[in-house]
Structure formats: C-alpha cells, structure tokens
Image (tube, rainbow, N blue to C red; front, side):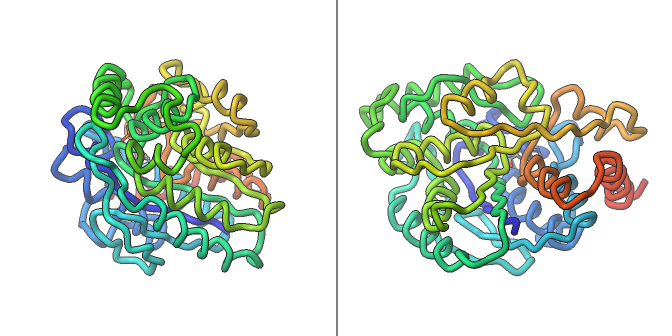
Length: 329
Ligand code: AAM
C-alpha cells in the first residue's frame, strides 16, 4: 500500500529556499495540489498544476503514472499542510511547521508522533509493502536541521538545480542559536530534534512506521527528507529493515550525499532509473538537468510499480502521456 503524507514548514516562505512551487505565494498550495494530482490526475484545490519557478511540473506526475500503471492502493495523510486537499484523506489534525530559525518548529511533535503511531498500528494487517512518500515544500531544509541535530553528516538535496546551501546553512546557524542546538545536540532526544528543528511530516512518518509491525516491509519513498525520518527512527532504537527509494536525480545529485547518508543509516537505497532525455517536452527533459528531481513519493511509487511488474519504458511513457494531457499539449 502507498501512503502520501502532506505537510508544511514555514521555511518555504523564505525567498529562495524552495523551488517546489512557481513562487513563494503559491508554494503553500503545492502539497494539497500534489495529493489531488495523485488522486484525480489533476489538482482540484487550485486550478493549476504545481510547477517550479521555471515551469517544470511536480513529480506527482510520476507518482500518478506509477499508480495508473500498477493500481496499488493508496491513502493520503494530511499532517499539517496549509490547505486540505480536495481528495479524500486522513487528517492527523496538526499545524504547519514553524520556521526553526525563529520558533520551535513542531511544538506538539510527540502528539503528532503518537497519533501517527496509532494509524500505523491500525494498518498492521494491510497488504505489504508499506511505501511512504511526502510533499513538504522547504522540507529538505528541515531535513538538514534534523539530520545534523542527530549527528548525521552530509548535505541534503533540493527541488531546484541550484541547491541553496548557503541559505540552508544560515537557517541552521540561526536555529542552533535560538534553541541551543548543534551537531548531534539532540541525539538522545530525537523528538526534540523534530520539535525544535524539523517539520510535522517527520514526526508523522516516524510515528507511523514505529506503529507498524516490526518485521513490516517498509519503503521510505523520498530522498534526503526520508533519510531525516529514518535518522529519527534509528535514534529511537528502531532497527527495522528499510529501503529508501528515490530517483536517480537525487542519487546522482552531487550537491547532496544521499547514498553516503543512506548507508550510514543502514538503509538499502533505490534510485528509480527514470529517463526523460529524449522527451519532446522541455518540462520533463529538464529533469535530466536537475530540475525538480523527486517528491510526492515519486521514486518509491516507481519502485512499487516495478515490483508489480511494470516496465521502465511503460512507466516513463505514461508520465509523458499524463504530462501532455495535463498541460494541454
Ligand atoms: C513536491 N512537490 C513538488 C516538489 N516536491 N513540486 C515541484 N518540485 C518539487 N521538487 P525543497 O526543500 O527544495 O522545497 O524540496 C522539497 C520538496 O520537493 C518537497 O515538497 C518534495 O515532495 C518535492
């Protein structure tokens, strides 16, 4: 079964920090619109497909294409997105995360974790694997904050071709000064790392996985954001086997250390071999240049569809088809 956790962090309001939306004014709509794209094949909560500032489409297209080809069951879980999606969803009823450079990011991280843990427990009998994706614009920054707070070295990825690393460093420094944080400072209290520096999706997905049976087959569908979730789980003593499934665009992103971090956290990495190099659509062809890269569980949905027997060619062809339909080509 596939789960899409949609959340938010006020970090996304900092100009230049996120490309997961056309501009800072519409980024708050991205997560809810992403969920609608997965569910309906188009956004309903807003009337425009989420794109980055240069018009490249959301990776929700890939997730939707994987679903259309493989028809795996899925649920959308809202964990603090600014808006509810139009599609049916489970609501953990939490607030968007605050900007950790200014405030405690997720004051009720424990409650969010516990509520999601209950949800995980109730899912215990569902069909395996459990493939869990996210949409949290700005989420790579909160991932960096949590990874470092837990003593995990390595840079995170980003939604744009130019990773705003300097800006991320500034937010890290400010966050540390605000709450007495630092590298490894909250190693003994992983939920404090999320509370002070993270986002609600991290608390929710960590809780959800914690609630699943210990031997469940878990696939964290995302790039460095899901490594932050895994770091929280590992710091809590969770020793389950896990695949972290992303796209080749994150695995090959030289600005980040996805593979090194996955290995240090004891995860089996998977990099979806998407290939849009011959796409007639610039929006997709530019994925090969590092635009967008991953999100909405795209790499994990691809993994899942492959697992269910769908070929790489069919999957990439379906993405092209959906993109043409959606953008009216
Ligand atoms: C989610 N929706 C997206 C998107 N993501 N639409 C367009 N591009 C993306 N990359 P950052 O921290 O740089 O904002 O990157 C994290 C976001 O990018 C997440 O929302 C993730 O799901 C993805």
